[in-house]
Amino acid sequence: MDRILLSTLAHRSPEEVFPYVRSFTDYPRYTDHLREVRVDGDGDVGSVYDLELAWWKLSYTARSRVTDISAPESLSWQLVNDIDAHGEWRVRPEPEAAPPDVETASRIFFEARYDPYSADKNAISLPRFVSLDWVIEKVEPKLLEEARTVVERLVADIEGRRREVELTVHELP
Image (cartoon, rainbow, N blue to C red; front, side, top):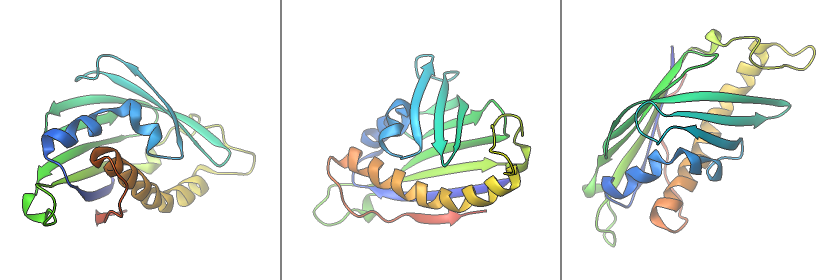
């Protein structure tokens, strides 16, 4: 299993941060490759989200199920189609990291564990002469770039203004 673990600081309390992390239907605003999110459920444990992704000449709908919620600390998810993947959003208070003009802060962690070679080769319609191995080789480096975009936009939503954010990379494949 490959693992991605990233974090950033938001200048808000966990109670203020968590609703943004939990609101999957807002995620298309945070990334250029997520076109739409459809939900089956009320957003609680067991809810299923269809995440319609598009990149280059490829499109794919990932189906993710919420497996656990411990508000305002964590939300766990698992993909339920085509690839073995699961992960978690965690929010931890970190008031000592707040700048002097800010009341408090929280560290937001995103973790994903996945087996890129567990992907169902028939799930994605690949252009002629393009292999799944080639796609994996091209997509994995883009994950960090995409994570930076998501984090920056997520923090701007949480704080109500755009600022430069620091993405801490704890682990990458």
